[in-house]
Amino acid sequence: MKIVSLDILRLALPFHAGRSEDPSSSDEAAYNAASPQLKRMETLLVRLTTDQGLQGWGEAFGHLLNPVSFTALQHLVGPFFVGAEVTADPDSFAATRLAADRALHAFGRTGPVLYALSAIDIALWDLSAQIAGQPLYRHLGGQRRRIEAYASLVSYGNQPAEVARQVQRAHAAGYRRIKLHETEFPAIQAARQALTDDAGLMVDVNCPWNFSEAGQRIEACRDLQLDWFEEPLWPPDDIGGLARLRRHGTPIAAGENASGVEAFHQHFLQGAIDIAQPSVAKIGGITGMREVFALAATHGVRVMPHCFYYGAGMLATAHLVASLPDPAALETPFLQWPRPLYPDFPFAGELTLPETPGLGYLPDPAVLREHQIDSCSLTLDGARP
Image 1 (tube, one colour):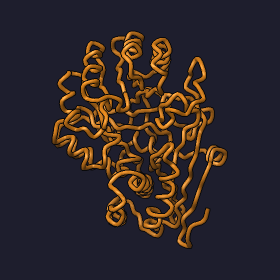
Image 2 (cartoon, one colour):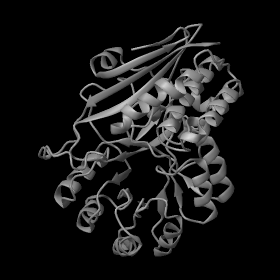
Image 3 (tube, one colour):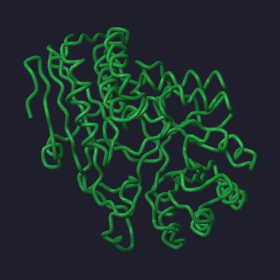
């Protein structure tokens, strides 16, 4: 089949996070998608349409960077793929994918250009699985149709009582593992005390500390038996520092901000992380994820994909998790959507992937229409807004 059009859709969906009080209207911390300041979450979707009417969906990173990724899709990356061929064999689009990657390498091996390539790569795999008549997880060689999901909470401002209430709410909803976005010991301790002993607890601190501070914080949390400490260091690419922090005994997770597949290779070579967290909308799509998976297996590193998304990137990550061994699980934002993008997607502690070919879910056309804030189409005849 030939790709005859590429649509770029920028959305912003309202959500709420069950807070007892509304956060301040300040935008000071809104660059982090887990910020308590945000009341709408953006996504950037792509839709590839073939000459036989099939549609494949992808998602680019992301969030407040979307205007830049949108421009990269429209002017740099997208034109490579309009007119390209795709079949049930992923090798059918590998040459076009590689040609775009090589032609655009001078613009950086990460950032908006790679995010744009990630979105298109996801959509190409979706199409390939549909043509093959297989759900994507099976097209990827996965066998686990039923997978676990863990709840990824937004920040609750390091307020111990509120954090305790929220983790209990997530646990009552059926999540056996919960991830915080808090940085202070009292809030993390309150979460641990609010949960049963068999519940898993992880902490993502978003790169706030130098090496000395990080070591002290991790040591203070040693008795809390955290499943992992995520991105404790600034800068996030201090690979040697991460390797030394592992000596404190709490597993170290990182990777959503890694600069491409090669950066993961360096993390593995230097023994920097216990858990690798590639992000499908940032690392080069499903193709990039599979490269990281293979490297991680070679070095004996566990993979737990990063996924603070609600679009095609979330769906693709679910299928990728099904191609990994236990205890890999799907990270899902613990948010309530007045109107979700995928009304049939089961936000729960466990989910069964559909047997529908491809990603398995289609976005609600009304949600696309009502919450769209920008769009563009690339066709064989050229671009149109």
